[in-house]
Amino acid sequence: MTLPMGQRRAVIADDHAVVRDGLRAILEEIDDVEIVGEAENGLEAISLSKELQPTLLTLDAGMPLAKGMEVFVEVRRWSPETRIVVITGFNAKGHLADWIAAEVDGLLLKSTKPDEMRKGFQVVLGGGSYVAREVLAILGEHTEVPPLTARERQVLHLIADGCNNAEIAERLSVSAKTVDNHRTRLMAKLDVHSVAQLIAYALKEGLLDQTRQL
Image 1 (cartoon, rainbow, N blue to C red):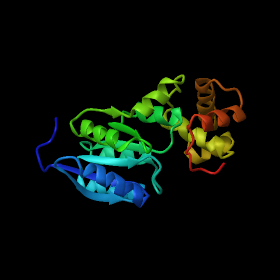
Image 2: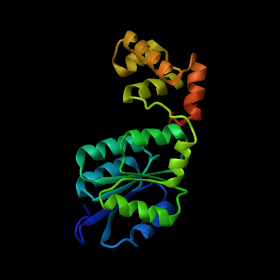
Image 3: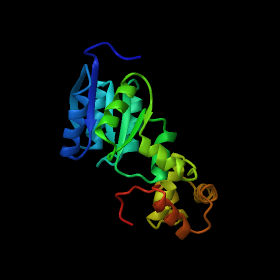
């Protein structure tokens, strides 16, 4: 349900001022939306959401200090009524599929036109969900990438960092056997048969953080 006049408050989270300014301009065109805060990194986004309990959080998927999915999980925990629209500049299908699987309220690309962004915000503020047409086109043109569990994603990133089973086990405080089970299920799920294939697939499909150095 749409909130009464004067009660819809928004926080904008993006590490680029020019993007924040653009989002502010779009949101200010929507009736009874007040911009109550801006965050330049993930930790600020979590802190502001916890403090202000905004109606809407626009969230950059690639924030410094705390990545988009971390922020999403923490905001859901501390401000469960906040509607979250993720805005990403990364259009790999695996990356987009993860956000869909997480049941984000809105998913836009940074290339989404302002008019469609405004429409998306209005739909989400009205209690609905919105996925940009470009996102639907990308997901519709390719076979579905299986969503990964949080632990599988951790193991995947550590494998990409060159860690062996024993090192991963130590990092995650689990047994080497447990790591081996996660690795086996991960490779079976993605239908790959070597570490090289696994990393190549993960990079191609956006399953690894796009800002990491491999």
